[in-house]
Length: 261
Image 1 (spheres, rainbow, N blue to C red):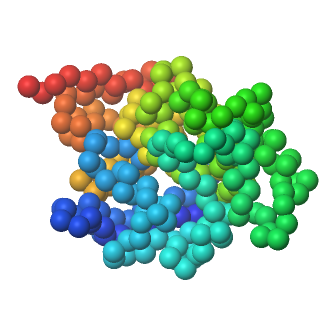
Image 2 (cartoon, rainbow, N blue to C red; image 1 turned 30 degrees about the vertical axis):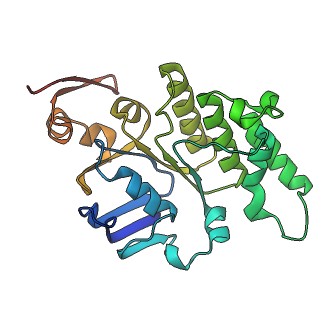
């Protein structure tokens, strides 16, 4: 098995005046994983994303990146290891696509120097990889949802990270853009050996692209393993409170659902 790159050990978290969201939650992400973290609304997925990315601190338990406690890793050093793509991004400033992607190099440059030739190469390569080079002069806020997502992934790539975390990256996209984006992530995982964890409510899309699924409900892991192992009719029915049938056709998964009422 590949080395553990991120681990959560007995993590607990709750917001003020709310029920416990995560209770003794433990999870290991291995180098090279393309993991989908799925579950119904309110399952704790977004809270988990924020704790994994360091935006929230566990109230009890620990989060480790490559064996080091995340709370002891500076923001700059953490951004050298991990890039984060939130669900939606907007800005009040008239930044161009290229300027947004340039922000991905902040953790790599000295405070006392500008962008180097290597920085410009990384920025150009990232734009090219997501096919946004021809849009580099456009204003970020003028882009479509799919173009914004590709721009944010380009910014993440410019960081040159080992780990890429994404929160609901396909939430506002049509089916064609969903397929394009998930195919791009799969390509990054294979070609650049980037460890990817995707938080998603889209079980069909996660099943189609992720090699490993972690199914979460009520702040607990219900199932964790290879997609073909954990994705079955009983688990999906119980977690999503519906009648579900999971079909495996030549390694591709299809899910049929209907109300239990």
